[in-house]
Image 1 (cartoon, rainbow, N blue to C red):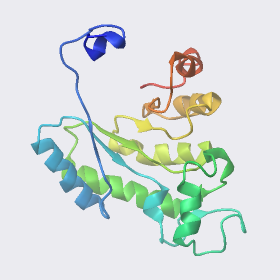
Image 2: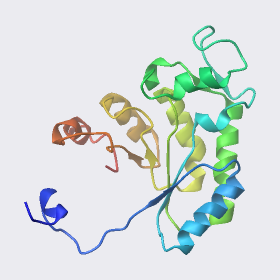
Image 3: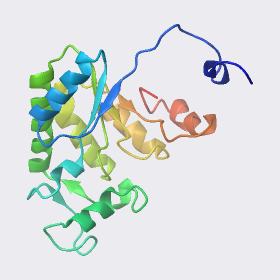
Length: 198
């Protein structure tokens, strides 16, 4: 159509926008904090990282799941991949639960990141893994002290009632939308006021 891309999205509303920078995982929170600091040195003023059950792989007493569903403990890599593969089992149906020890380890990781990064920059988190809404709430509460910008895609976007529970239960904003196609997918979430950020 020989027009700027913003015209295809409804027109121009601003001259510039803030971008956030996502960053691949590191084995420790300190290493992640240093990596995020390097992003800031490149000029990024908003950051995002992953915090989820994938980080608990191989760590004892961090996750439970129904016996026989994914094999016997300890969970091997192929069994673990079954619960994190988006095309296998939807979040509410895995019955994977995070233990208090698992929650503590994930919170310690984010605490280490913040100790290196500080609180002068917004930090969002994503990729929690296929856990149910109750454990998403527990994890969101455990991460509350770290003043996160948002918790992204904790449950599938189609589960509007779960998003309502998350939004009403947590003090940290919740975010979804990158997998939604066309306005019809956004409408139930917007009408229910189920998310804070899209």
